[in-house]
Image 1: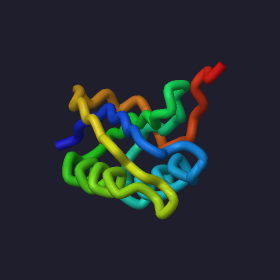
Image 2: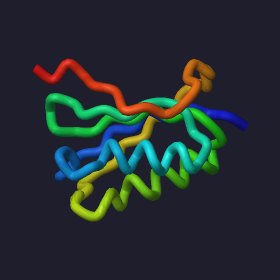
Image 3: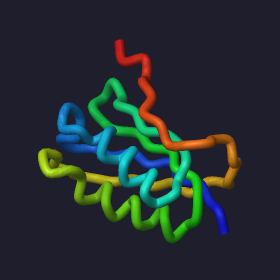
Image 4: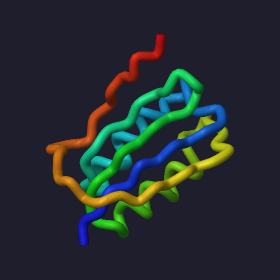
Length: 95
């Protein structure tokens, strides 16, 4: 069953290739959606796909890439919308 997760990651998660690694992980797990940095220092992820695959992504996000230090991963499950064709890195209006 396909689902959607809105994920906020806090800690030392910007400037450590977090978005790039998240995109690679999500793509390998056949997920669609996006990842972006937020002005408050968090990383935001929206992922759609099979729940098992999203859970695998969440496990990877909890560890983060080698240079990251993840303090918290907050997940909100939402209704699947099917609005994405791939998983991309996007940019918030940071300033």
